[in-house]
Amino acid sequence: MGGHHLGVADGVRVADLLFPGVGVEIEEMIVGEGEVRLAVRSVAASAACPGCEHRSSRLHCYYKRRLADRPVAGRRVRLELRARRLACGNDRCGQGTFAEQIPDLTSRNVRRTTALTAQLTDIALFLGGRA
Ligand SMILES: [Zn+2]
Image (cartoon, rainbow, N blue to C red; front, side, top):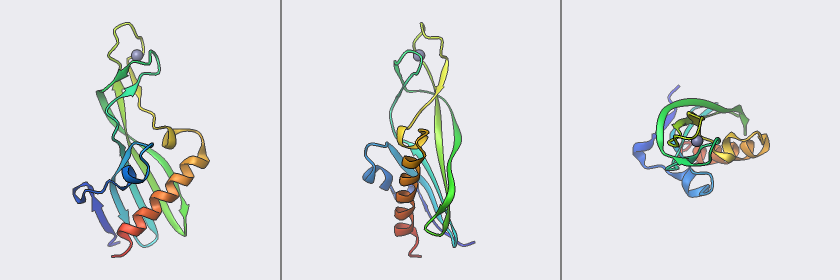
């Protein structure tokens, strides 16, 4: 497909720049003919356990979450989050592990996620679409 490829090595932190409140950075961005693929990951140092609200930075594992797969501006956009599952460090909490939430991306508020996806796509096209 010959899409232009931008990786972390390029030092792209545009998501961070433009969405300081979201706390994600673009990890991988592939702009093809009719498709844009974006992989983002969280840059937060820790997350609050839903069971006890203690903050934890103990990584349990990474897993992929597909956040969007929809057409934006005539291109198919796939947005993927490399999400973290963390282990709660509180001995008195029965939670065990929990999935990190990124409010603007993982909320059930589809309109917010859609708006963010559209903005991320604009950035991807701006940075990668010139090739
Ligand atoms: Zn806990």
